[in-house]
Image (cartoon, rainbow, N blue to C red; front, side):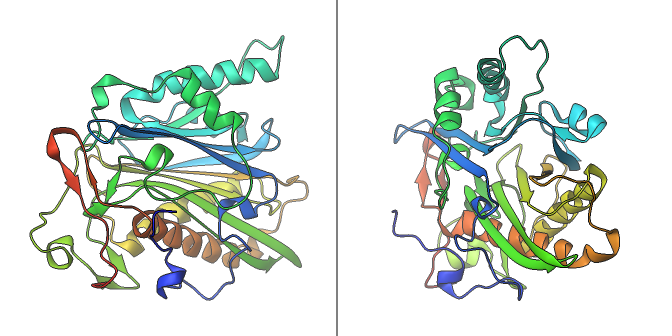
Length: 327
């Protein structure tokens, strides 16, 4: 462990709903997470994060684009068919295409004889801290994240695809959270995992916490190409249209923590269900699920910052961790 604390350990509790036992996307049964981290202590701070459903064929799914300044490989087919056919892999911007090819290798190994696949791979630009033009991600890095995906509490902060990211003026990374509730007469779990790398002013439960005030001598860091990818998983029986509604709420939740939703921010949410969508829950009972999504994403975003450590990378650029004493 890196000595950092999650939001709940610091007394920050978004929303009234209970979390799952791990307070993570892996509370949704059958959802696994794997990381590969590249950190040479100097110019490379990047990696791969894989979200792997136990069944990755024909899961109901949807993508919502808050701002499309990014590269989400495979998203148009998910939009068209409402189906997720691969694990979801996250990495750095200029490595997204190599990562997609590696996911293709993985899928071809799982399904010999098939002739068409749709890898879903997203990215954020970690070029402020990592030498992004070196494109260090290899097929082996991606396969290691996929094949090493497991249950339990995923690592957060400066790990995997979050190794070199910065958000809201501070060092950020990967964060996750979950909520449990009753919807439609039965128990439902909603989990979120985020790759946070976007601009704005950190806001914690409505209180702005600008880096200029909390970290003496630190200037505001607004890396170019700042973005956010949010993955929402649930075991609620929802169809693709309804999952699109969940994905939209995930983007809305970024506003709670102070997102600026800037011109250069590629903000995407991917939502999928592990349940059979027939019959789907009626729309009239979805309001508590929407609340669960927004609370889980808010907490996942805070965890992505609170679990990250101060990092100095390429060209001496430094991104500071959120200081707990000032928080």
